[in-house]
Image 1 (spheres, helix red, strand yellow):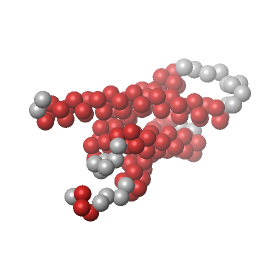
Image 2 (cartoon, rainbow, N blue to C red; image 1 turned 30 degrees about the vertical axis):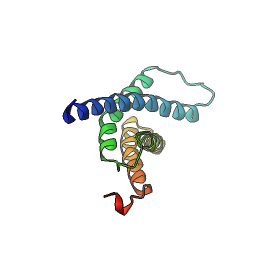
Image 3 (cartoon, helix red, strand yellow; image 1 turned 30 degrees about the horizontal axis):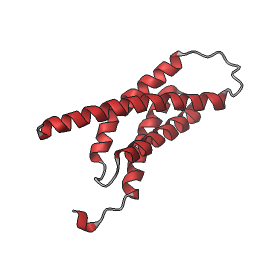
Length: 132
């Protein structure tokens, strides 16, 4: 297998993994927000919100997942990259939704959360001077 074919296969796997995890965490963030807004379940609920959260999370995770993993330092395991960015996306999406209660703002918060998670990951990893 050539280098280009291997890189393409890894990128496709990262895209699929990022899309799957992004959809999962998008629905999880919606569940957290729904629980805190209406803990007793008194409001009528529509399943369309879950579908939208899953689709948006899949798109964000699928597009930013490979980018973040390929630009992360070599010493960082892939699971840690996904964990930091997913946590940042959940916290950012919930914080921005709480701030304005507008789903489009929660998307902005999720994007900023992914960037903040990647930045925190980069700052926490100490690279050895002899590794370069």
